[in-house]
Amino acid sequence: MAETTNALPPASRWAPAVILAWLIPGGGHFLLKRPGRGAVLAACVVSMFLLGLMMRGALFSPQTGDILTTVIYVGGFIANVLSGALYLLTNWLGYNQVDVAGHVHDYGTKFLVAAGLLNLLAMVDAFEIATGRKD
Amino acid sequence: MPKMSLSHFEASVLFALFTSIVLGVITKRTDRERVRYAAYCFACFIAAIFGLSWLMYLGHG
Image 1 (cartoon, chains in turn purple, blue):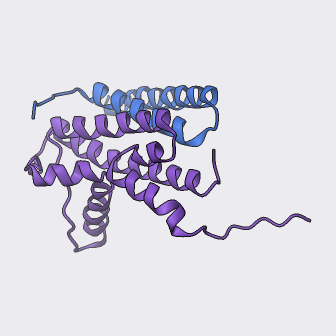
Image 2 (cartoon, chains in turn green, red):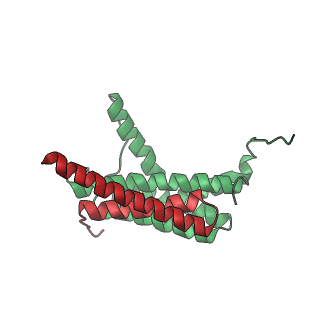
Image 3 (cartoon, rainbow over the protein chains, first blue to last red):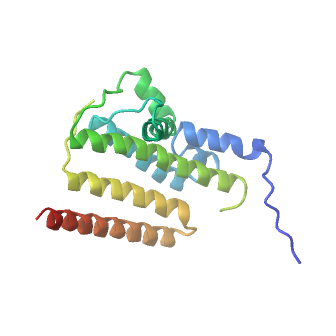
């Protein structure tokens, strides 16, 4: 009977692609010679992030307190950080905006979070390609 | 940074579009499967948008 192994390959094989995928949306796929998929992922993540900024969405900063506050603010912060260079540039260039009421701003905040979560999916995809679990 | 003001519907459709494309790209193995799955996800999102919108409209009376 054939045995399958799920052992994690050495980090040197997948870490560069995953780190690049985090830092530059789609970058991991470009490194792994999947430029078409990388371009599509980059276009989606960057578009979503820029739309979020243009809708004056707010970036989260981690806050703790009751469980709901912790989940929303720490979770939102992690999701924002997952956008990589987009998040870092937004903070460094001062495009981070205060949280204000209004449905457009609220959608903007959700778009910024969703951009990070989509980039997380792209990072997982890059990991699977780098480890040979996927073409 | 230019300011953009979208309606609920426009924002929801854009969200659905980008999310569907990414889901299609990362979950399927061939281009044909990716396009089909992205279109399927987008259709589900749109159906959910209209369904929930009508539900809220009727719920409010």
